[in-house]
Length: 506
Image (tube, rainbow, N blue to C red):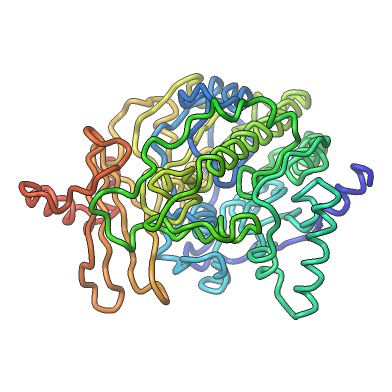
């Protein structure tokens, strides 16, 4: 199969009309600016930890993301609002937090809650931007046509694996599931092949290579149609960890460091840990133990972490190709590049794999903004920021008045003054139990991570967690129950109750 044919299979074209702003009212008018309105290249990577060269991790090879960091501002303490794909993406693309949207899982579309809600690409589209989405921006099977002039979401499941044998195997399993009347969402979630693949194939034979191919072509098409908002969403390093063999060959498996905190946090409540259902959905890991019952073998852990590293280097190469196309088309000097991961990911930390918990490793994400002429280059800020801040940030740089209803804070001031005082806390959450009986709400302050688990029926406190990052940066022990911490717990509980509005910078 030729690469052009693969690309035709990958692309799905669809027009979209702008919707009315249910939460924000009428579209605001753009403000006058001295600078011309910039283009936006918005790059989102699935399940990417801030475990990159530019974040000080020498074991992993990410030269292209590192280059982008040298061209912009790196946010060392950025946090998602919920560590799972759909709620995180719905939040950052609408500017509303999960409790406002009522989106807590991968099945609920935010359009069911607010059919006319105005998304980030939708609001810039309404103000004259050409809005194009390539790859996974919203959740896999919950695309949002209203957001785009041109939408090219994921449609080709056979681009996940490159091995002909695995593709044939998966095609049979998918056909059997369709014959039973299974939905596309069910097939994507439950009909999964092996957790890893190393295959000697061109980059374009894999899904993310096809995304990079198309994004590079779109930059050429858009070069005469400024301004534009081009969103590019990569799947890797989301499981399965699949990449061409050459990226696996970058690493010696025995030399990859394993998680130093591979046990569940001491004194942590049972509901705090996920049950690793995502990893167990892959056919070669269906019998893995739960975190409190055991752990993977060292060989399994090394295989998975090797696969994750290979996947990160693979997607880094694809990002490099897109950035090269941006330079080649002469668009770089007037294009703001926003690069982020949608949520964190455990690689054996706390005895777990994947995401779905309120810990630092699940909620902290990489974020880089490179804004030529509008921000510093090669700078780092330690300010506490959140992905919900992206919506007002892009609006401000596009010259659009930020809708007052949005629940984030524009990061534009930090681009020119990275050390200025900022938020006093960042907020994340994740539910547990049947029909989300318990909601865990986490607050990250400069020093502490505080988590409350409350019964959604009566609001009663079911459990609390407290981690001191000054003495325990890996969150190895919950000290909420230790004598002498009563006053601190009371202060943090009151701060959590006041919420994100009270944490905003002056």
